[in-house]
Length: 177
Image (cartoon, rainbow, N blue to C red; front, side):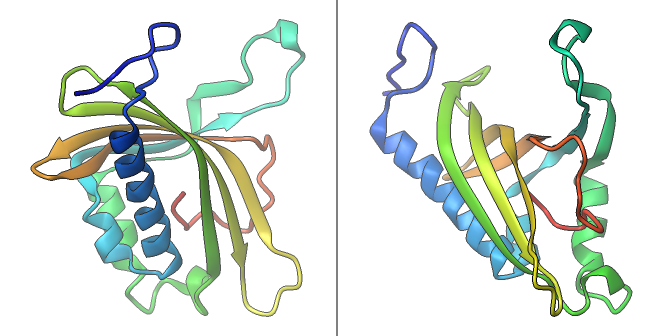
């Protein structure tokens, strides 16, 4: 049984909290091991995977996220193309492969539209080292996911990545967050 806190509607079911947190740890592990094909199996076939642009504005000028512009907005087909490409010789931006670490924290769960769906918010820190670089690329932010139950497993049906950065200083965004 899912328990809900009335004030902010976050799920207070510790068993579910543990299950979803371990789901995200497994996802991070697969990405860091460069096992993109196994990671791709964690996505639902109706996935929307996007990172809207953030800008720096004075607070009176409106929100600093521009939903109409994004660094990327992928569906299942484009995600499959991105994953498959990483196993070819044409993935020159990832040759030699980057060394990455995905850190996930502040996992907060809300009920979705039905009993087989959850909205999950989490913070992330992505660290990448390429070649012989001394300085790491880092990206931090928040992810808002819609997870759907598929049998006994959870699948990511939607991920919106909100970077903390208005200017992303990495040379490319071929990695997954």
